[in-house]
Length: 219
Ligand code: PMT
Image 1 (cartoon, rainbow, N blue to C red):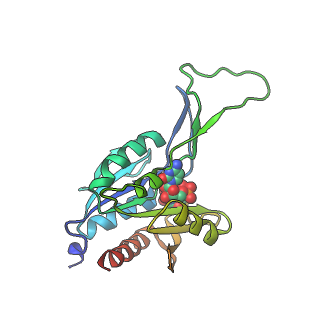
Image 2: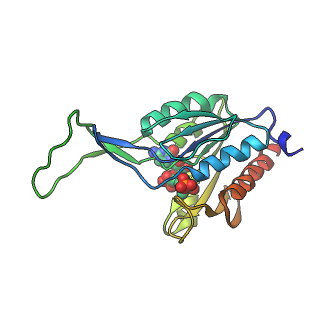
Image 3: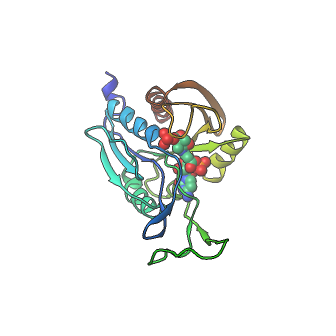
């Protein structure tokens, strides 16, 4: 019965980090392992959904039956997201997208210079905000918020500023949770409600998140 909850529903999920190239041998990235996003893909698949997983570079593999779109940079992730979002019923942005990229990617390896060096960065587009701003075929749009302080306030700000339907906040300063861990804890926020999902493994949390989204769609 579980396998029919999301029958005929298409879910697109972003997962993992992005890599922002500096030169042919270097990049800036973060500690996202993709575990949370891949767990969401697995849960959506188990609920009977058609799943697109737009993934930054990770070392885990996706379950059979998921359509994986591999990307590296935020700009590539944005192109894939905007390609798949309009045919999706649900879009979940779980990727840890770099907020900035190098203003110029050096064609040659950057040589060692003086004692200091500076790299000029420019802002990346906000992928989930662009998805949430779609005026035609806008999916139910769910973001994540990775915070180390003021979790509730910052998450609520992101919910509002990015025009999301729901946001899953995690306090990534908590030992053993968040980035690269097998466990996590989430607080879900909607415009007018919230729900605590206490510490659990990411598979169980992912299933709870999908079930909460399903309830909203049924309304
Ligand atoms: O991958 P794991 O190791 O399992 O770790 C899971 C996780 C901690 C990465 C995950 O639970 C999580 O919190 N993902 C979001 C991380 C993040 O970048 O959060 P943020 O608060 O910086 O971004 C807020 C939201 O905007 C997110 O939905 C993000 O995908 C999105 N965003 C951010 C910047 C940008 N340029 N484009 C975006 O779409």
